[in-house]
Image (cartoon, rainbow, N blue to C red):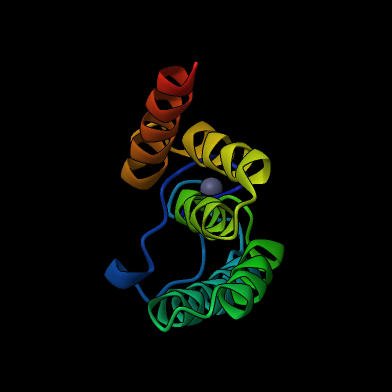
Length: 122
Ligand SMILES: [Zn+2]
């Protein structure tokens, strides 16, 4: 998670402070929102394992509403959209994930696979 003010990386596991170590901005609200978003994201992952894609997508959307700059949330959104046959939205979600984190493994693998499928179908 990054400080929205100065861009410094904030790691809540390493510190109990809720202010940015670089610019001292108060990040407590953001941290709370991020924690809630991660909770929804985990619910979504659990529902995905159960094969409940629609509920998983609803939970992941909640995560994205609370905190939209986490690449993993967008990557999961893409996966859920693809699983439900909605490839146009899935590609948009994966591209969003890669914009936030060009190293995001889920999104880059998915887009590469999709590109090879589409090119082989001509
Ligand atoms: Zn900062």
